[in-house]
Amino acid sequence: MTLRQIKPGNRGFLYVNSHPEGCAAVVDELWQRTPAPTGPAVAAGPVALIIGSSAGYGLAATVAALRTYGMRGLGIAFEAPETERRTASGGWYRTARTAELAGPAGDFAFLNADAFSVAAKEQALDHLAARYGKVDYLVYSVAAPRRTDPVTGEVHHSVIKPLGSAYRAKTLQFDGDTPLVGSLELEPADDGEREATVQVMGGADWKLWIDALADRGLVRHGFHTVALSYVGSDLTAPIYRAGTIGAAKQHLEDTARRLQRDLAPLGGQAHTVVAGAAVTQASTAIPSIALYTSLLRAVLGDDFQSTDRQAAALWQQLTGAVPLQLDQEQRIRLDGWEMDEKVQGAVHERWAAATTDTLAELADTDWFRAQVGRLYGWDVPGTDYDAPARTTVAWPATS
Image (cartoon, rainbow, N blue to C red; front, side, top):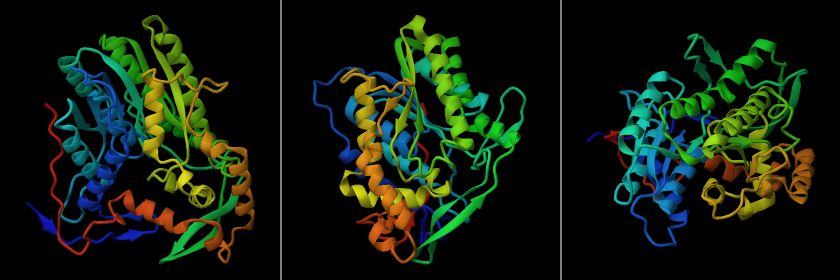
C-alpha cells in the first residue's frame, strides 16, 4: 500500500494529479443515481462492449449497463498508471471502483489498451469469444488527440479549428480563482488538418470494430451499435459543428448509415447518438464550450441533465423499453432539454451580455469549475484531501 500526500497541481482546466478516493466517490454517486433493476433478476444479462468506458458518457453508459441491466461484457479504456511523479489518471481510479461495484452482481471485465490498435481488438475479441460467444451491444465513446492508422502506420493528430474562415469568440478563463471572459482567435484548418481530424474522430475505427466482430462471428442477431456524438448550439457551431470536429462528426454519421446497411442482414442497427452538453476532459479543450456550458447551467439549474440521466434514457431505447427517438438524419437524440428554443434563447441573451463584470450573475462558473475538478477526483464532497491517499490501485483483472 502506497500512501501519498497529493495536491491537484492544476493549471486552468488541466490537472497533474488525480485523487483516488475522490474518483471512487464520483463513481459511487453515479452508481447511486442510476436506477436499480425493477424487474425479476435474469440468469445472464445481455453482452455489451463499451469502448471508452472510463469517462464521460462512456462511463455513464457502463454504470447504467451494469447497475440497471446486469450486463456482461467488456469495457475498454486507455488510462495512465501511477508513476513516481504522478498519480494514475482519473479514469484508472474510476475503472477500479466501477469494477468493485460490478463484481458481486455481474460478469464484466475491463481492458486497458489503445482501442485504435489491432492488438486491442484481438485481445478484446478473444475475451468476448471465449467468455460469451456473441455480442448484443457495442457503445463507441472515444475522444483522443491522435490515432495511428493500423494499415499504413501513419499517426494522425486531430486539431480544433474552424473551417473556411478564422474564428473569434468569447471564452471562459480562470486567473487563479477569478473567472474571466476572454477572447480567442483561431485560423482556419487546412485540408490536411481537416482530414487528420476526421481520421482520429470520425467513424473509421468504429467501423473496424464492427468489421472485426462480424469477421469473428460475434455479432448476435438483433445487435445494436451506437457512437456518441454532439451537435450543440449555433453559438459554438463555428468551432464545433462547422469546424474540424464537425467534419469528423459528419463522417461518424455517414459511417452509421453504412453500418446500418451492413448489419441489416443480421437484424442489426447502427446509429449515432446526439448527447447533450457535458463537462468532460474533451469538451474543456474546445474554445467557447466552457463559457457556453456555464451559461447553459445557469439557465437550467437542476434541469441540466447529467450524463447518467442521459445514459439511462439511451439504454431504455437500445433495449426496446421505449421506441428509438430518431431525428430526420436517423440519429438518436438525447439533447432535447438543451436545444429547446426557450433555453437556447435565454443562453443567447446571456452570451451577448457576458463580460467579466457580468459573468457572476449570468453564468454558473463555480459549478463548472467544480465539475472540471471532479473529472480528476477533486472538489468531491466528503473526501478528505488533507489526509494521505492510497494512490497505488490495481487495474481490474481481466480473466
